[in-house]
Image (cartoon, rainbow, N blue to C red; front, side, top):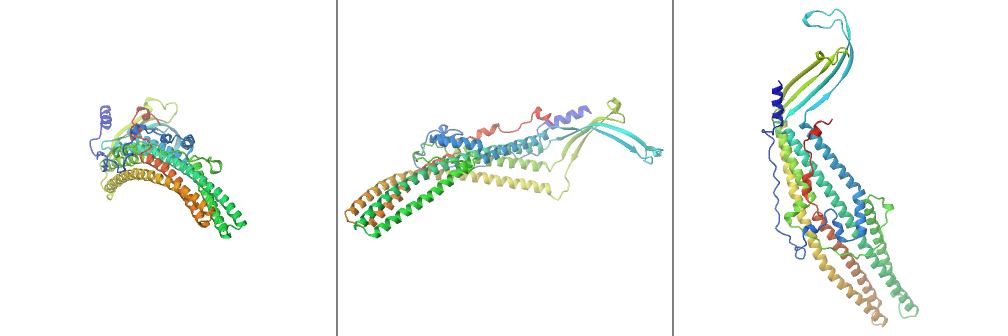
Length: 488
């Protein structure tokens, strides 16, 4: 019996030779050779210059660094992702526990009275009731022989889902830090835009004073005064709306940092940052540097392993079971040799008829695999699109910003000329008002373009994965160990 039991344990530890397939292969994705965007973005610095995990330091802004650090420490969505990773690790350990024998003990103490009319062996009737004690210390052992790979593939699926959760955590971290940077630069752009409007309001108030003085002296009409007052009021309304937008971005920054909106105030600052030189990856490298793509790929691997689990259900489930312990009517004799008992057996459960459930489960697992594979390819295509979008935006915004700066210079000259001609009585005040509105519009647009360039730089870094590398997932997983085997 001992030799047979040892042979069964050796067989259980061996790699399964029946079922358990198919072998996993990463789904193929069509990868472009290079990006469509023109230079200088194609000839960027090496990728290793992108700070891994702290990509925002590229912008060299201490205030942004402070907000990012606070968000990493206190953002609640990030804390939830950390908890999900811990859940996935625990589930992987639960699944891996099926590798080991399950041993339990259930001691009991019982006092019972047996009926005087109870049935007995041999047909002899009982003569009197019996009251007795029963002391038990039974141990039960159960172990499944993983001949068809059900346990192995289940552990594979759990480990790959654990890795997917690790990639999800990195994706949440990248998303949160990107949102912080994007909101930060939107806030700076609004500060600069509000400064432009305040400057225009100051000029318009001075213009209103000039027109009122001329009207008092009879050199200007009441229409000139009303037109200038209209322009001033419109600019003040724009400033109020910009302030509303700034408040909303400030509140968003507070929430991203895990702070109540009412307790956070971002200082007003000029928009003096310039888009940094961002190192660019090749399209083939992007698949390994985007955490969302890595998460999708690990989900495909997990779905493939579940096919093996579903296929193993078509084969017998073979288990070893046994029990042993002490049983006695008296406590003093409980641990005597004569009080011991034991049993050992092997059982097999083979599905025969269950309405096609197992076959349907296998088809379901295969369909789920195809779905996750399609999602993985879609994630890759979306990543390529986002990089191209960001590169295109940076190039277009750079060109547009240069042209817009020239437009601001031209609008400033036009306003100066209109004021001089109006003072000389050569034009109506409507020409001055038109020049004022054109200058304000062009200065606001120039400020918006500077902010959009910084925002597009953030989106490009996010599209490139923020310096993350999927190689870090190799260390994520649960492996069988003696320590776990002896844990309750």
